[in-house]
Picture 1 (cartoon, rainbow, N blue to C red):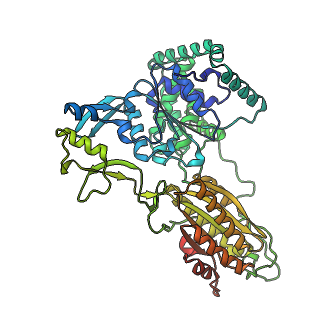
Picture 2 (cartoon, rainbow, N blue to C red; picture 1 turned 90 degrees about the vertical axis):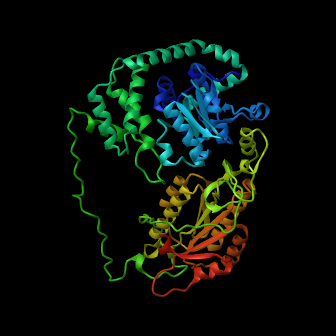
Picture 3 (tube, rainbow, N blue to C red; picture 1 turned 60 degrees about the vertical axis):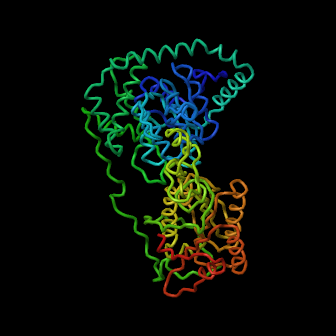
Length: 587
């Protein structure tokens, strides 16, 4: 095995190191999810921990199948000896060690379920290929991910015991030390590792001692009340959070050499166990502010009275806009004329409703998702074939035949079970001009797109956001799987100025063309939100036709309102052969 960067040589990332250590002491905590951008020592920390444990480090490849993870029939022995013998999978290899899953958010949900079930139960049950068996699989599960590539589903996120957000340090001295140590390690790994040999042995001894002490650490009722009250006040669903926090606090006490869990242990544990479990919408980033945690713990302390909420400085009254004084309608209710001057404004989104389902026609070949039909999804399992077999699962067929002596019969034929839908690239092209700001339409626009972003999150799409106003278009977000970033960019989107519709459409087309070079199999859906009023009308008609040739589908959300409508957005949709929906239907 190649030399790994010593765990004790890591600089910074205290929360990450503490989370890994407590799970090493008590694997029943059910593992750690490490979220962070590239280059923040996620993988280095995980691999550095492995030598401090007794077992092996097993790394799960992204393309792993259920057979590879769980185990399956030993095909060689079945065909050669006619014996149905079980061949264990990666989970068996990880027993008493560390199972590391990089980019865990990109694994199919059913595989993540398998991993989390095994981590929680410490045992794997296999019922497949005429084999019924089980084996021990107690391991420390660590998953790492980059949030920009999409998040785990909330129900899976909750199954990880702890979660840590890692970011690069902003302290120049810390960054210098990180670089210095990395260069020294790369130059002479053996010499660098020898420098930290004493620290590594001390840390290994500390982990072993904490494991022995763990069962003797006392967890008083007053501390359990503190944990339960804190979880309740922070809006955490279910009871898994309470249990994990209690386990983590106990493991921290064992690591510290203490005989009893204290409120300090609870606070450190809560930071690791609760942030990813708080109730939140799909477009909100997980997180837990220190001040929120302090307040929740203070209010939950059995001997403390909660502080009264200070009265509002304005007496609780609402701000009332002053009258215009001349009898004229407010600015947002006046008729809009393209080219008329307007001041920039920022409207908060209305509450989004249920988004309409937008799909692409035909069948694609993109990455697994839940939006449009696909012809070639990833094989996730196999099943007995019915009728004409068009997608033979050869390995599964051979396994079935081997059970009956090796000769393949019709009853042995198996076909692939594939994930039947793909995720798409959704490019939102939003009119942020003064005409859309009139009558508070932008609040509706933002509500509609927030609803569509929630839908994109659930269907595993990538998203991009372009707006156009004044004299140009702005790319607020390049294609990403992090819909939370798109939602934040949308909420702060101002309106005002003219309507350079053609520029917005051209920018949307450029995004799609660029992404197609990176990922040719991912089809794109362009969602244009506009009332169609533009100073560059002819150019806009040409631009939307060009966009329609590049995108697999175009949808126009018509933002025009009022008793007199010109139908300009409908003309754009007709020119592109696009679907058109009234903004109200999407919002």
